[in-house]
Image (spheres, rainbow, N blue to C red):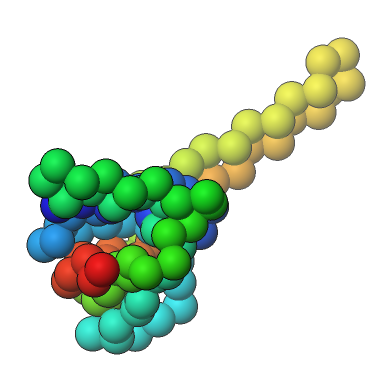
Length: 103
């Protein structure tokens, strides 16, 4: 059993028990989230596709931890202008565990 969900502009394939990394949600650890934006649900032989979302399927997720990712470098250069800018930042992420897919 798996589902495709729309989460923060990203489409994710989730399976119960799986851990998923998404952009920061500002939720505390241990908090439970319900996602109703399910695009596709497959259970063995049956496959349901939403237009755009399925109405009777939800995915329950639990916040495992909040953390920062690896440092990303942003470099901007304007040719013939003697202008260069180099900056770095660490994006914040939230790790979620899929508890169950409820139909």
